[in-house]
Amino acid sequence: MWRILATIGLAAVIGLSFGTNADAARKGHREHSMVPRLKVTSEQIPHNGMIADEQVANVFGCKGGNVSPEIKWTPGPAGTKSYAVSIYDPDAPTGSGFWHWVIFNIPASVTELPKNAGNLKANLAPPGSVQSRTDFGVPGYGGPCPPPGDRPHRYHITVFAVDTDHLDGDANISAAVVGFQLHFHTLAKGVLTGHYGRAKQ
Image 1 (cartoon, one colour):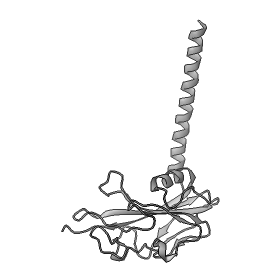
Image 2 (image 1 turned 30 degrees about the vertical axis):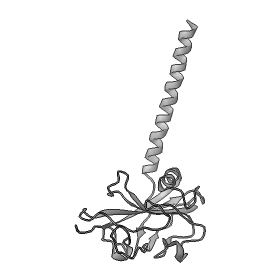
Image 3 (image 1 turned 120 degrees about the vertical axis):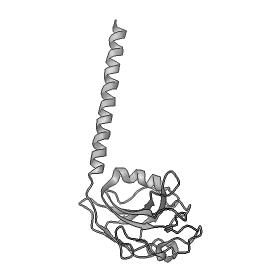
């Protein structure tokens, strides 16, 4: 009899634990989805506008300037200790999109990146920031270069206000791992979307 009662008690504890974790996960999702918004702008890319050749990649048949755009944003809320910026193409035919730029640990006093900050040799990125590996396989900015004939792809430029001044990682960390950390440390974010497509050859 005591074994039956013990089994029932253990099941109740496990069920309670699973329910608590599920409730916490739902609460965390709601909180994450309701983060405040930052306003993100760029002199080179109007919101929902076309991306110019200057920002386009110079690989895979593309012959752009591969210059990262200037990006500005409104200050984050109280508690912001750093910023992160990413450029992501959700329309790339990879099954997982394509990361074109990831830069994080931007000091909280900075609210803009100058044009060409994604060029590691130019040394224009804010001191202390980290530019990590993109889906081109190297750190730094890599511009749009969708397959010829595709409808114009979307390029989401996202700025994150972060509650820590230091995300773990160096130039070799993947965008996915940076994104995993940002999921738990984002206080606010904003998105500017540009478009780019190539004619069928």
